Amino acid sequence: MNTKEQIWSFLDEVMDPEIPVLSVRDLGIIRNVETDAAGTTVTITPTYTGCPATHIIEEDIRSKLKEKGVANFTIKTNISPAWTTDWISEEGRKKLKIYGIAPPEESTPDKSLVSNKPKVVHCPRCHSANTDMVSFFGSTPCKALYTCRDCKEPFDYFKCL
Ligand SMILES: [Zn+2]
Figure 1 (tube, helix red, strand yellow):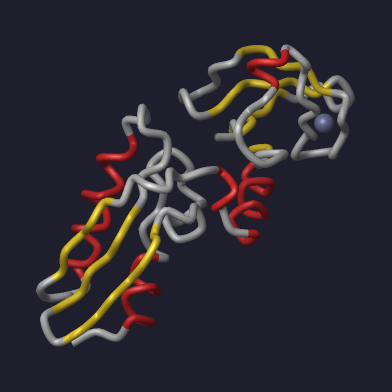
Figure 2 (cartoon, rainbow, N blue to C red):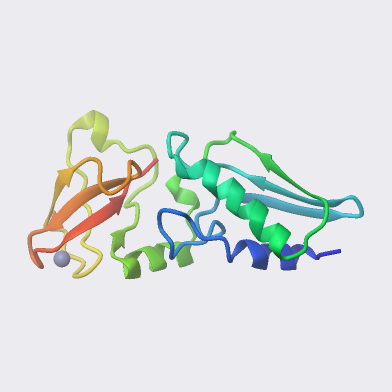
C-alpha cells in the first residue's frame, strides 16, 4: 500500500499537457489524496472546463499511478468550487515565469473582460509593465498573446479565471 506522501510525489511527476514545466500538483488541480485499506482516492478539480487538456490530465494521472504500481485507485472529479488560477502554487508561478509565461496577475475573475480596462501584465523576461495584448487567444485558449514594448519579445499570459 502506498502512503499519501508517495501518491503526492507521483502526482508531482504528472505534467500539464500544455505547460510541460508545471505538474498537476503545481497547478493546484489535485484537491485531495486519501489512502486507506480499500485503496487510494485522488480528487481533482479540472482547470478550464473548455480546455481540451482536462481529459488528457485525468488520463495522465491514471497512467502514472498504474506505472507506479498503485493498486485500487479511484480518481474523483470535483467541479465545485471551480478551479481558479489562484490555486496555482507559488512554485508553479515561478516555473511559469522561467518558462516565459506571465503568471496570472490578480485574483479571479478576469475583470478586464467586462470593464474594458486593460489589465497590466508584466513581461516574464524583463518585468516591464509596458506590454500590449496582441491576441486574446494565444497558443491555447487558456492563454493570451502579449508583446513587451521594452524587450520587444512576445509572450504568453496565463489568463485569470
Ligand atoms: Zn520585456
